[in-house]
Image (cartoon, rainbow over all chains, first blue to last red; front, side):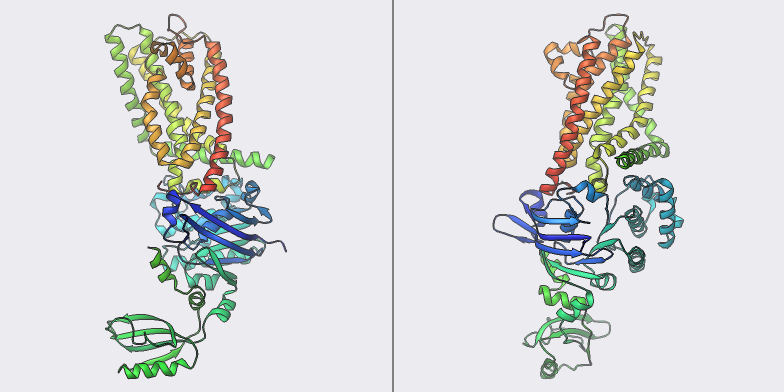
Length: 343
Length: 272
């Protein structure tokens, strides 16, 4: 099969200096002061696929995109884009790709939205008339038409990111990299961007998108397949449904109890509890526990322990497994915990 | 091949457009770019007049004031631009685009040339008018050839410098700042470079600006003594060699630095 993207045993190590300082607490660092950002990464992305890379900050997602976009060389292994080696023939790779990053501040404040889109399209040789047609259509879909003649310096974060999205799509790349494209956007704008991205892939079945994100719901709802990546290694790669089926524990419960004020949670020494997330709602006088159990029989032990501690279970409900549960199971910690470690 | 050429030409125009539009939308630059450099020209011209130096020296200062604009355009508006654009996030978008890095740089230069030409012309006209500078042009054709060859060599040097800014960012910026005044001095911006002594003047000739300025002064004031460094034709040959060498070196350096940046991870590293 002709893969849109293929990596084989891809490895990237950063050595010393500024780069090391940037990465040292986020990724695996060995005794030589080297930081292994990517380690033995094997991935294949099909043409027409919207492929997600899901992982915490410092997992190696952006490093992988930088290699695929010819901005960084691999330390070892190979990466091909549309069958072309990114290290050996970067010029040919560049004709096939484009990239949009979250929180991007590219462009010039003095240009208007339309001019900015046009300017970047010139670097791909797209004629002005074609840029205008494509940009008008995309601005219409993303609700950006009224800002077409507004200077970039006057745009809000969300509007600017919509412009960046169009900037990436307007050259009609065969493969587009979206690096955390909804980072920092409010819910409504993020939803518009996701909907636009999904529609584009559906309209262009020969084109592919690689999307990095650390939003579970985004990966779950948007991507055809997802690779879960942590500390430079791909832990699993499959459709979101299969990941949940194969990796998410079946025994996830939500238990509501009166507000728990004693620290930790009332099940913290129970063996059958693999992990528990605690949410306190002081205004309602309630604490919600999201509990993952070793097996289905464990719920009896849970209610018994609550009873022993004099805690009333106000409600108990079994939850559908989520991608986050699969992630937790594969990686051993949630995204939030992983980012906390990185700080 | 034809497609590549077309894309590169579009890239030059696309990047130049920012400068051209910027110049039209923020006209305040006219005040800062014309008035402030004129102050330095006035200062040196008044000193020469106070010292009863030959009138040609005042002409030298006015011509230099105009040429400074081109030097600053290549150093700050083109070479250092890679540093600013790296910080803004534009650089990585340029680098993933299927265009030559030199096309992007040329776009910056061409766009900057628009503003620079206005600045240079304004300084030349106002300075000449106020101080009554009289030009005696020996050969307009030669003058044009020397000017454009000097520009070609200067822009080659600018592109060579940009490869340093691309990788070393702030460090290159500080180094360029450090060299600004020494370059003005040894290039003989406000006096005939020969005054520094032949040895220093010849060493300073490594900068195309030194030879270019000296040749342009000789051609503009051909009627009397100008204390030239070398004959114009020799300077032109040296400038052509410099133009070819700097542009060739720039091409190699950009490729090398880009590869080095990809290997070390510094290419897109901001705030360094």
